[in-house]
Length: 196
Image (tube, rainbow, N blue to C red; front, side, top):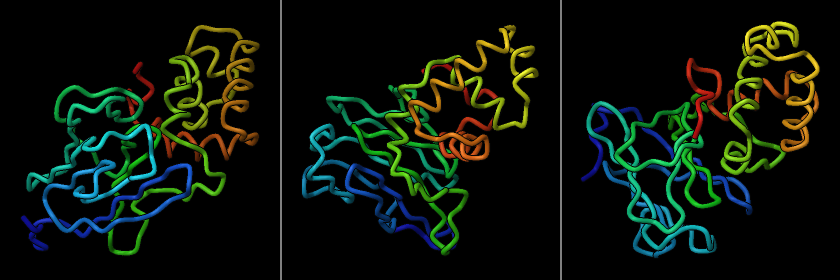
């Protein structure tokens, strides 16, 4: 069923894979994603994506995502889902090795940052340890290394070790880049650094 324009603002699905980023207009209340050609968003070259992998559904108030019995699972912000899970512009949906995000369709990015470095954000999010997520979230919140150490009850040297591992995994060096990464990974809201 087509979306009633009076009910919801136009949106796009931003799909990031190894081949780059594309945007797909959403024209229905249910959007199926997978390798099969009968999906609304076809990811035919992605071996980690099932034929019918996941579906996004608009219920009049917001969007949810559901796994359709895929081989590799569906993730929201690095956590594998087992039931219908609400998603919005701040959330990152992992479908195999592909990342999907809902974007404002009025031309604005709706908080989505352009990933010039082609970082596979879903793979990066799932590769970060629980403590690395916590450190990254606190850095993005503007905490100094000393403040991060005090809040997490660890030494400053341990904070530096976590930051070194985050930098190694992401290829990013500067604190501002790490802050933008935390926003892209959805680690800037309370509780966002939770364990997968």
